[in-house]
Length: 439
Ligand SMILES: Cc1cc2nc3c(=O)[nH]c(=O)nc-3n(C[C@H](O)[C@H](O)[C@H](O)COP(=O)(O)O)c2cc1C
Ligand SMILES: Nc1ncnc2c1ncn2[C@@H]1O[C@H](COP(=O)(O)OP(=O)(O)OP(=O)(O)O)[C@@H](O)[C@H]1O
Ligand SMILES: [Mg+2]
Image (cartoon, rainbow, N blue to C red; front, side, top):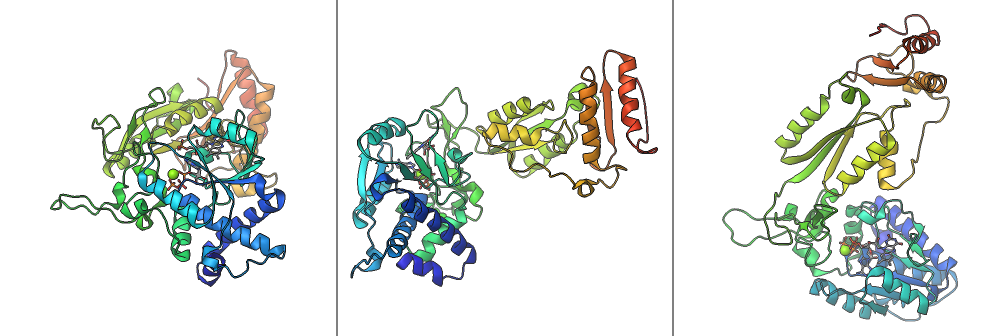
């Protein structure tokens, strides 16, 4: 099979691993479901083009396992008559439409054309056909990939089916390495500088591939596979500028979809997490420095915020900024202390779980060179103290990266505050605290 052979003959070890894993997922899906129970969601884009050829390879290898012979068919045309769903939209690029139709015909894909929105289209299709699993070319980094795994049931409110995402962990570079290594056809728009394709209203060539110089009148673009930083794959896609104003998008050519000019800067936002900044006991020094550095490198800082050490406050701020800005910086609240909730807040904003907390018994690894006690040990003691003193606010911060940990106790009853502080100091050896002050 030509795809399998091209990958095996290539010297790209990373691509071989990605290919093997994806084909494994596909073969497991073919083993789990009957052939008529699976469908392929194909839209002519680069990711679904990669998936098409992986499906062909997976289908061939699956069939081979159950002693199937494909006769004398030339293998570059190996068909995969899988049920294929295409949501055709009047706002699709004509090049995308024709590529989808031509490819479907070339590989004998059993095309089901849908002209409604995804959800209602799938609802009616699933009533008619015995579909249980749908292959998608979703990749980590796509806006809708958050929280998904290689096998992910459809979301609540959607008809029930399994989403199978064989290339979920593929990078932009992996996608192009596959396409170029296997020499498969792809939609012509990618040769004109488009790096991710949506509708004609929200997609332009990626400005990072522009070859324009001031003398030429027409702007030319390098092909998509020349984009060196895959993180900027969606730079040619419109950005929703406000959740309240769904219909207004900003394109990277500086125009919004109403034709008005807007800033063509990439935008950043900065979130500082720290009660101490809000109490006025510490100053945020990082934010201002970051603004200067970003501005100097051509970014526009659209927003800077300080939030409490509180999971929901962090989640709310991240949630709002992530859909508006190209990058969100967050600092503070990242250690092992009870008040360090930033990572949990970010996970909540993305609707995912935290993959790793720290296992017990690695306290020595967390020893901070200027702290006489491992930070994690302090964290445990303070957590316990918070249970004993629910009436006292216990905050922790450091003035600088190398500075000592400042633990503050705030409460209405001075005796209780002193008692809490004393209880803390008794838990550590003499000299662990270099200073003790009471306002
Ligand atoms: C076959 C198929 C299944 C989908 N299943 C889900 C789903 O279970 N949950 C969901 O929120 N969106 C689902 N979507 C919608 C996608 O998450 C996403 O909105 C879509 O690919 C469009 O991306 P766009 O909004 O950038 O055009 C599905 C889309 C397709 C084509
Ligand atoms: N109109 C559609 N019809 C069928 N499937 C679709 C449609 N739009 C998206 N999908 C599915 O969602 C996946 C992810 O879409 P996405 O736009 O990120 O990728 P792509 O179109 O393959 O490539 P690109 O990122 O270059 O646009 C597709 O690979 C496809 O499986
Ligand atoms: Mg697309």
